[in-house]
Amino acid sequence: MTLKPLAVALVALTLAACGSMPSKNNNGPKDAMVFAEPELTPPFYALNPFDYDAPPPFEINLQKAATQPVTKMVVNLASDPSKKLTLDTNRLIIPTVNSKQRALKYATLAGDNEIDITEIDDFLQLVEGKARHYPPRFVQRQERKGFEIKLKEVTQQLDTLASKDNASFDVLIRAFKASVMARNLDLGSVYTTKSLNYAQRILKTNKDDAEANFWFGFGLSEGGGQREAIPYLDKAMKAGVQEAYLSAANNYIAMEQKKSAVNILKNYKVKYPQEGEVADRLIQEIEKQGRWNVWQVLNPPKAP
Image (cartoon, rainbow, N blue to C red; front, side, top):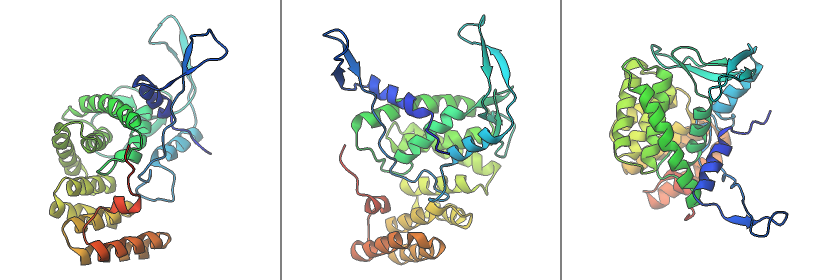
């Protein structure tokens, strides 16, 4: 089943607000103008860092939600309480407090101390494809601007939820990832501090979470803390996070430890033989140049 991200239309509207080019409407009044909705460009980074051959986690969750029993509910419209709305599609629901493990569930409506996280997860997936690592990759300035505007809104919402001392693990991991990407998009130094605080809270709660270790590891590395990043990236690799190998190689390149970077890539080639050509190309670049960014070699950036 092919699933179109729900946030595409939302981001497209933001981009249009930033100034899409108008076109003449030949069927309307002479001076009428219509705006063409921009299409999002393809992601730069793999949407599933755990397994490049698997669908993105968000789409997997949507598929699971669609196969679960649906309890239809009739509710009052928030915009007009006199009208009713029938909810008949499962959404992605997480607890907001008092949960130290992942606790995603599928339901038509969030209950007390829960939140419908569907749209946020959809948008965070889209941002990951462009800004999971530093530097972020955009080929269109307007597209980047649209992502920045929406990411600021999402981080504010997540920060509010995460401000509670008993905020759930599900809330914290999303606030953490959003802050890392806001930092990568140069939205302000405050996001560096936020991401560090969130990571510390997350790992204090669940130190073995693979995704948290992966994000904290490459976040430290790309922020200048290469030595501090090593144990977290090691743990992520042992937990089976595919992209952790590339992040670890990048980390050793930044430390000018070519031998360690090459060894990581050789292990990557053994673990993921389908990536053999990529590993060989990166190893060749290391031996030729010594110091560079893995992501730039894999796909050189184009100027927006």
